[in-house]
Length: 260
Ligand code: IPD
Ligand code: CA
Image 1: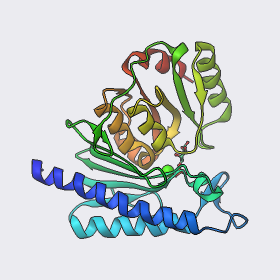
Image 2: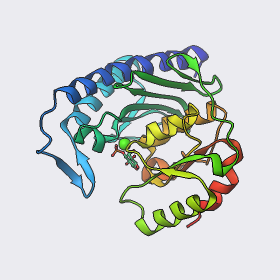
Image 3: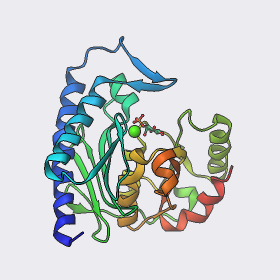
Image 4: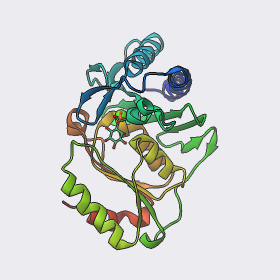
């Protein structure tokens, strides 16, 4: 793929993430169905907006790049050599409960490597973007991970979903606490990782997360000078993986803490 073709994809991903984000924002502000919550499974919220937004993103991408593949959290798809991996709303539980903390996540993966990662938080109007080898930006300004190297000064977000055993989560949380880290959990893994890239927190870890949640944001961390585990393996595309994204100096302690 040429330089120009890749750059076009970055620009398109930014525009599409923003357009999709405006739709998410509109649906969030007009929602009045707090008592009509729907679930895909335990602790797994279903909203009509997820599917609506994913359809919009799929349409726009297929119009711009008809030969690229597509895989979305809601509708699935296939993993071809050049494929877009999309989470229409990461932070669906917060979206459904009326909490303004969620984002649109779009990754472009070519020959098994994430080349483009774009996240748009429509409530904060924050566009995070990265292209492999070109750095990471927030609303057009370069971002980098924090310089924190002492766990006792660190803020570590530890994500959890029912896909991983809760006792394992507690084990890791306890170890992090024992190291002196400030442990927190919010409702969007994608934004949590992006916040590491922007230096707002020093690490994001989760024992299991899906490719569509984290692929774009992991690239943000790499391009912002951080360290991440080898997240997007072939198995991860199908089944998800653990994720660790942090400042380079926290790598060893976090890898150790995440051993279960
Ligand atoms: C979830 C969120 C959550 C993370 C989970 C994800 P969703 O995605 O990113 O923070 O801990 O692993 O499944 O359901 O909001 O799209
Ligand atoms: Ca998600």
